[in-house]
Length: 355
Image 1: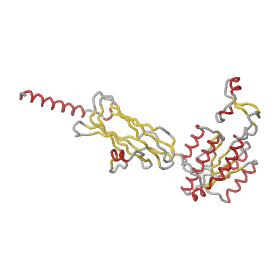
Image 2: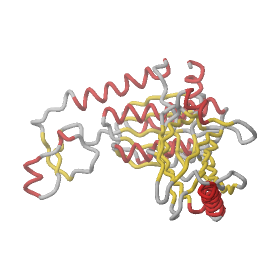
Image 3: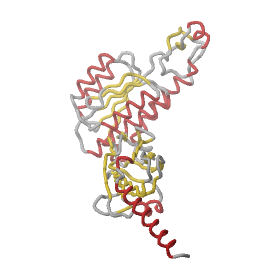
Image 4: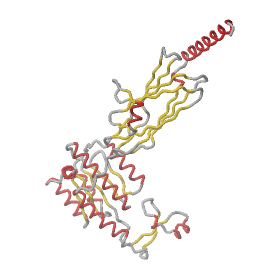
């Protein structure tokens, strides 16, 4: 090969490398767009949440090095296998950080997913993400960071079958048997508009077609069947408080499973939820459970007195309280005196001792 041709080839390679380096030095990290989203807004401790990310090069030239790292908060646990963690995890002062790198051609994207879960109840942010771009030879780099968008509410975990829940099982068993097994479809008292809380079998399709809107049947002794769940948010030790919220979560799950309309009322930051049943109703209650800091705004005696005066249409009371003591007795007697009904008392302190 002639010497002149060799020199030209060497000069061409040097020129190409120099052009690549100059081009990479002009690259702006803002040309890298990283978007993240999760597949749910409400979760529970230990439930898998998928974080999807997309990294896109919006420039008209390639980015020879793009690095991005996720630094998750302490309450977040990564559910990927150990091989994945060993490949992407980096140590140091930044805590639990998982790093990725790639070369992105112009207007190309890189997608991926990370499975996460949360250990504790509460409102959680995910952490921070760092985006790094570097020059062709690796002499310089630019880094920018921002919070991973979106926050997730983690509601209380349901309780397993513990002795403290036995009275609840019998209480709901009586109601669900009356409602679903003893209902006589021939005893129709009339028809009313569909509210979204009734089971599908209660819909009268003939009346629906006649009136042009969904209508449901009014059967004997089932029209006013519902439950009020009263929650006493009295200050107490954190394990007992968390058990109270788990008790409330378990109660709501069982009422939803039995399709019994229910209202949740508290003397604190759980506030009050109107009577209902269904996915939207349950979502709002579970969200409030997750956001609760167990803050009390008034005494439970005031809450019980108000609901005893206005609860004539209710067939049952469920009271969730940190402890069942003598001070609670007058409030329970007031509820029982308001109507000849049943009352189920659940104590978070007893549930914590049985756990």
